[in-house]
Image 1 (cartoon, rainbow, N blue to C red):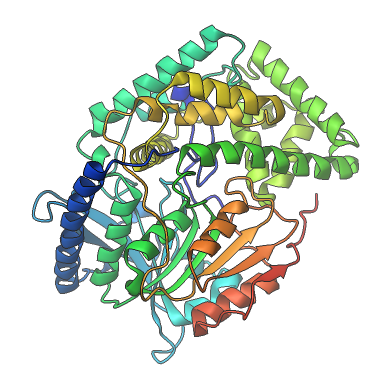
Image 2: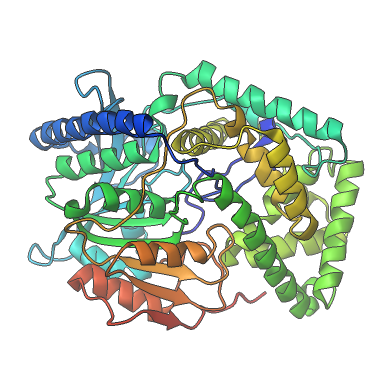
Amino acid sequence: MRDIRPKRRAAALGSAGVLVTATLISGAVAAPSASATAGARHGQDRADFGVTVAADRAARAGIDWQDCPADWGLEKPIQCGWVTVPLDYAKPFGKQIKLAVDRIGNTGTKAERQGALLYNPGGPGGSGLRFPRRVTTKAPVWANTAKAYDFVGFDPRGVGKSAPISCMDPQEFVKAPKADPVPDSEADKLAQRKLAREYAEGCYERSGEMLPHMTTPNTARDLDVIRAALGEKKLNFLGVSYGTYLGAVYGTMFPGHVRRMVVDSVVNPSREKIWYEANLDQDVAFETRWQDWQDWVAANDAAFHLGTTREAVQAKWLELRATAEKDPIGGVVGPAELTGFFQSAPYYDSSWVPVATVFSKYFAGDTQALVDAAAPDLSDTAGNATAENGNAVYTAVECTDAKWPTSWRKWDRDNSALHQNYPFLTWSNAWLNLPCATWPVKQQTPVNVQTGKGLPGVLIVQSTRDAATPYGGAVELHERFKGSRLITERDAGSHGVTSLVNPCINERVDAYLLTGKLDGADVTCAPHATPKP
């Protein structure tokens, strides 16, 4: 995966600015009472009936494929269409919403075709509509798979073209906060708590009808309706980052509907991790990968001149942050914007050189490169709307999916303790997720991810030093999905592995998608090539 989710500028929350996943994640859940469990089961039964009704309806209707609208940026021969789903699966004959889908046909012969491969890039809040462009742009890693499959993308509910939600005015959302996300005082924390509460209220004011239904189980139900609309008896699915959790929930809810499933860079599906604890785990992993990048910058001091040790590079980073806190660089880049820009380096190896180059230029006297890279672009109206929508969906799904701590004392204690040893992202991540503490709609109990009857072997791919989705998540899903296989990319940490060039991984993904073949045991691969300045 390469930056498939919208760039998230959390200016309204005073947090990190561009938050580059896929999954900044979160909430420990108390065991429900017997009566609550019975009530939930009744609602579940109605939703199960609802998805059957919706899927049958979609199978009859099919999809009216047309050339894509010009402003969608999807060239021919990609085609676009719509799939209708209930807003509330417990009321399948009630209000309906339309989901945007697109496709490109398989590049091989009719005999080679194996159906549709659906894709989710993560977030939650990422659009999958660019997936068919892997064929039109001739991405070599996907050439073999493209011979056998139609590549199908979609905007999940609430995202982009699919009944999009919003929590605040997009232009206000991207305006630079300039403030340091690391609080210096109780007053700073109080200000952030106020912003988080106002953001949650804004979500309800602007998108209140959608919020109770913005959950991963509902998106999994949507996925099954799309499968039916495509005329597919079983689903072939590729999920990255949050898309792995969507796949895990789908595989649990519809085990007999899965044909092939690849999950890449895995969210820990344990109920205890979704979502509060998962975000805390992420803070630790980000610090590790941040240090990996600093080591690389130091090893390439001949190119970047930022110091020959990790400590020297960190000192430059702290100097830059202190400067921006005292006086925003170019009047627009404060510590929040810096964190937003620099965090793409621990996310993706492909960002190592660009981020180090901008960093180096700043200390060589070129401040404009940093302003151009890190400042919000208020003139980009469409891009800002996408960013605001992505953040709204991210917040809505994570806050509604699970029960979050409501005690500020707990948030403060946990994040203050983590910040001592893992300062790079901890407070930014806390402010991003804090609206969940005052969320205005009922929070659900996460699905208990497990193997069900008919679930085939799932292929799990994960790097050991991934920052956004720490390695333990892949191990957890592997244990829960019996018969799955885990491919580990050791000593690597780029988020999203399957689109990188690493023959040890690429060949196994191809073999699985083309033949269903899994190795007899789990596999460990050497890392992909390290970036060169």
